[in-house]
Image (tube, rainbow over all chains, first blue to last red; front, side, top):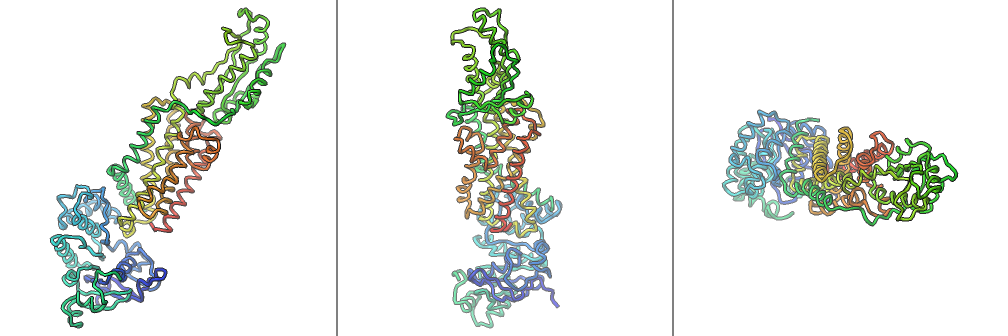
Amino acid sequence: MTESAITIENLTKQFEDKTALENLNLQVTKGELFGLLGPNGAGKTTTINILCGLIKPTSGTAKVCGYDVQKETLKVKELIGVCTQETAIYPYLTGAENLELFGNLNGMNKKALKERSKMLLNKLGLVEDAKRIAAKYSGGMKRRLSLSLALIHDPQVLFLDEPTVAMDPQSRHAVWDFIKEQKTQGKTIILTTHYMEEAEELCDRIGIIDHGKLIALDAPKELIAQSRVKNLEELFIKLTGRTIREEA
Amino acid sequence: MKLQRVSSLVKKELKKTIREPAVLFMIFLFPIVFVFAFGASFGGVGGSQTITYNIGVVNMDHGYSVNASQILLTTLSDTKILNIHIYADNQIAQNDLSQGIVQAVMVIPRDFSQSLASYQAAPDNPSQWTNATVALYLDRGSLVATQAVPPIIQQALTTITDQNQQAPQSPIQMETASLVEVKTTSALDFIAPGMFTFASIFLIMMVAQSFTQDRENGMMKRIRISPTTPTEFMSSQIISYMGIALIQAALVFAMTYALGFRPNVGMLTYAFVFILVLIFSLSNVGFGLITATIAKSSGAATGLSFLFVLPQLFLGTFVGASLSSGAQVAGKFVPSYYVTDALTSLFLRGAAITSPTLLLDIAAVSVSCIAILAIGIVLYAKYYKI
């Protein structure tokens, strides 16, 4: 039996008069690259925020590597890495200092931090600019640095919330390669994206979420075949009645 | 609590202070430039609203054919400017002076009446006079007292010896050692304690901006996702800003020292002053957190922070030294007032660290600062999570 990295059972989140998630059930196995798709406001970020322990669900449970996100939040935080939608970096620190800070916040020892930092800067093409203040980076470099901050402590589970947004095609493909490499290392990856080709290229399975409900769940090719559409973009429109970039 | 996390966040905060030009200016350069400009150009308080002074009197006069000391006291009371408090013991009077309870202490010597009688018996023959000296001790923490009280007493002495202004001599001399000392230094001495308090007040703005900016750019979320606990995060912020306050105090001290401020105190007092500034910085972190809770953006935080900066600045530091008596009463509701008062007692009045007034100031500063910090943390955590 495959081991579950993420288990979501009957998860509901109510924000005053709006239901962001409604009885969501989902399992992601260890080592799987899972794409969570949906229009803006569909509930993707709410799901990730609950799994990261940032917000509490109204009802239901969520577990990461067997740890309850509400009861064992600190343990969950040690296991996960999150690349947020925002380019979240400290602009007044250098790239290397940003990595050092988050390595320290994740309790890494000096040697491991130095090695991991060097590897990430190298993989994401930031070595030459490692000692420059991040405020002077280009938009793409900032996004790559933001991604590397999520990976500094070598987390078992990665949440990548639109990791390639605002990147040029070259940077995007470099990040894709990096994500694939993470998968080969046995990492579990939850990817949210607005780029359908990105989901098709990278994901083992995708889940389409709309109005807080999971409306489709399978491998991209299976879903396309079942729905008799050309690609994920068409499938998305067929299922939600909207393009992915439209507001919910 | 993991020290590794706290220290790395403290380092990050200090790097921010040094590397962000706006922060560097507001935290360090602005107070220094302001202190320099104010210290170099401030010439006196002017326009004071205070119209009465409390004067302690130690009357050692034995009396003679006339009770001259009683006449002197009546003359002083008639001025309606001085409130006379009689002390049986000079030590108690000096103690009250050091705590700012009275603004001056006058010691009337035992041969005061005899001296006056000798003068009246032979006004034109100084060789027949019995000389006497009235000692006057002044509150060196009060520019107004040092300027206003001696002329009033001198005028009263002149009146009772019935001298006209042309009279070259008198058997009764007034000795104002404290005043002589004050006159050798600049008005900077009087405003320096408030300057120490002043520098740290702008932390309010910096804390508010820092928290709102981190919220806006997603860094607060990123830190919350890491295993950093709220206690570790808050501790790092408090330590960082206390460290910044310490550097500010050291820079302000260096600047005031360069301008001529030389308080006659020992190392222990200096250490105590810096501890007081550190405690005071807690209230500024607290006010900063309250501002960050109210403000929706870093821009709004800058504006809103003045709600706390201005009262602290005008009611509790040197800036408000010559405000109306009403404003001075209002000052008692801001922590900076007690810090400035305590520093004034230490630097200028020569009060001991254990003196009751100082202990009261320290208690007021500590309790209010910790309470404000606690309110700030609770409010921020309630609305934004840490």
